[in-house]
Length: 182
Length: 182
Image 1 (spheres, helix red, strand yellow):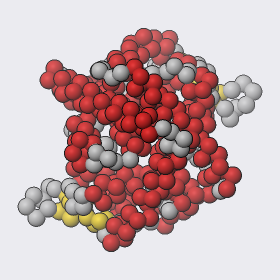
Image 2 (tube, chains in turn orange, red; image 1 turned 180 degrees about the vertical axis):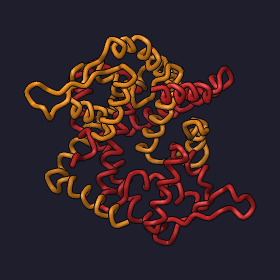
Image 3 (spheres, chains in turn brown, blue; image 1 turned 45 degrees about the vertical axis):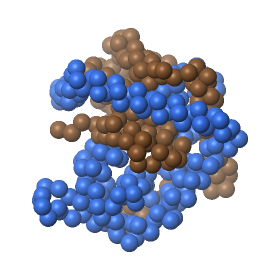
Image 4 (cartoon, one colour; image 1 turned 90 degrees about the vertical axis):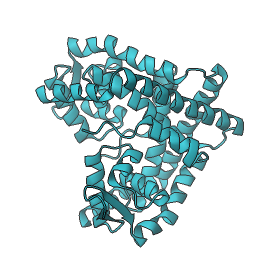
């Protein structure tokens, strides 16, 4: 049916015509959408979803992580991680094993098949990265890397300061209460 | 229960300690995660989800868009857009109206309540943007904007070239077939 919307052309139009001076935060997000979409298309040719790629990428660096740690590093909620890992288990990419010391913890291990995907899939991400930076000056890459790292540092500081003032869980509880009412 | 994982601190750790030279594409994505998370926290205080924010932001610029156009601009699949808009209708933010000329098309209109949210929510995004750029030089912002725009342009070109060679729908059909087998 529909392909993953929107085409990168739609994103480009926003910046070229509609709102060229829109916030940098928004531009960073749209660049991510373009990059993710390009990788998604390539992964699809290998029958791998972007969600599974995200978990595989983390496991290639740290096999045997707990489901919770994996969820945290992937930046998705635990129920989503749980469903994805169940599917990845059915595909033969991972095995899930309860911790011997703490039965509430589940550790995730790559199978040989899941491990072997690394050599197939990482070049796809490298290709996307290389295409993205075509015609871009090394100095601009350095400036961008520094800026994006500063952004993450600024947001980490802000988050710590906000956590001191008001646990974010409280705001989220409010959101859930509102959702129930709706 | 769990707050939106991971904390920005986890993201920062990746870049400071684990893999500081990781791909720029990955850094762009992680900066997006940090920015989205910061906005998500602020929106939650107003009982607005990030998904609803995305649709509201587009409608504030273009009220009366079709559901399909909205879906495309938001970068989400149509079934997801459909559920979100149903929820937003229940919250009194939008109304959905069938086109007079083409009954298959659904147009989305903001209610006064949905429109009024703009004055409350846009300052939150502006605040996040301002915090993100604390201590960052204007020249680096300019270099980053130029680079990110080049990234989107490069990916749009790549996508057009790939569409010529192989309709991306084919790859996605493959992915779906694989999912059914699993």
